[in-house]
Amino acid sequence: MIAAIPTVDPAKLKIHLQRIVGERSPFTNPARLSKVEQYIEGEFKSFGQAVEGDPFIYRGRSYRNIVARAGTERSGPLIILGAHYDSVEGSPGADDNASGVAVLLEAARVLSRMTLRSPVLFCAFNLEEQNMVGSAHFAKKLKTLGAKIGVMVSLEMVGYTDSGSGGQKYPAGLSWFYPDRSDFIGVVGNWRSATVLRRFAASMRQVKGLPVETLTVLGNGFLVPAVRLSDHSPFWDLGYPALLVTDTSFFRNPHYHRASDTIETLDLDFMAKVCQGVIRAVLNLQ
Image (cartoon, rainbow, N blue to C red; front, top):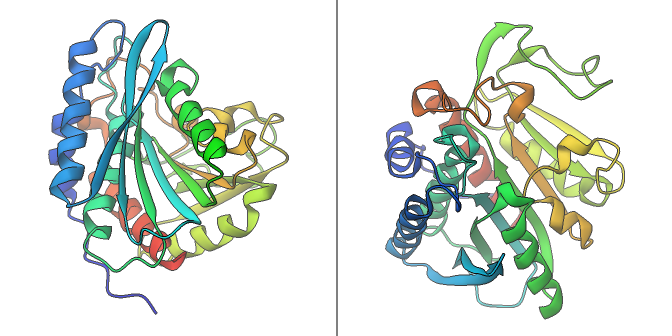
C-alpha cells in the first residue's frame, strides 16, 4: 500500500516548460543549453536532493549530465528516471524534450518528499540528439561501477495529443493492434524488461483518464529501429532493463524537430496525468 500521491498541477509543469523551451542545440545555441542546465540543477537542489554533474567530452568539448539522488543510500537496485534537455537546431523543443524534463522535475519534487525504500536517480541527459551521447556515457559509467539497476525509464516527448481519429501512426505492422487516436501514453520495453514493463504500465493505468498502451520488442529493438531513439537504448545495449515512456514522437506530433514545437501545442492536463502515473509507478516498484 503506497501513501496518497499529491495531484500534479499542470501549472507547475507550465512553469518548468517556460524556463526550458527554446533552442538548446550545443552547436547553435550553447548559451541557452547552459542556462537550462543550470535551471535543472537549481531545481534538483531546491528539492533537497544530492546533486552532481556527470561530465563527459564530445568532439573536444566538455558537457554534463545532471544527476540527483533521492531515497536510501544503500546499494541498488537503482530506479533511474531520465530525460534529455538538449534540442535540435532550429527547434524550441517543447515536446522534444522539454515535456520530458518538466515531468522529470515535478516527479523529482514529489518523490523527494516521500519515503523511498530504494534509491532513485533523476538524470537530465545532455546530447541525446547526438545519438544519446550523454546517456551512453552514464550507462557505461554505471556498468563499470557494477551498479545494480532495477529499471531505467526514459521520458521522451510526453506532451502532445490529438483527439481526432486517424492521426496516430505506427511502425510497419503495428497499426492493426493499437488505436488510431493520439490520446494515449506509450510504454515500450524489450524482452529483458517485460516484467517491469507490466508493473510500470499497470501503475500508470491507475491514473484516471490516462490511456496506456504497451509494446515489448525483441532483443534490443533493432527490428523496430524507431523504438531505440532515446536514452533507454544505451541501457538496453548494456543488458539493463529499461523502458521508454512516450507520446510516440513523430508517429503523432507533426511539430517534431520543427520551429513549431512550442508550448502552445502541448496538452498540459495530459502531461500532468503522465507525471502522476510515473510517480505512482516508481512508488509501486519500491
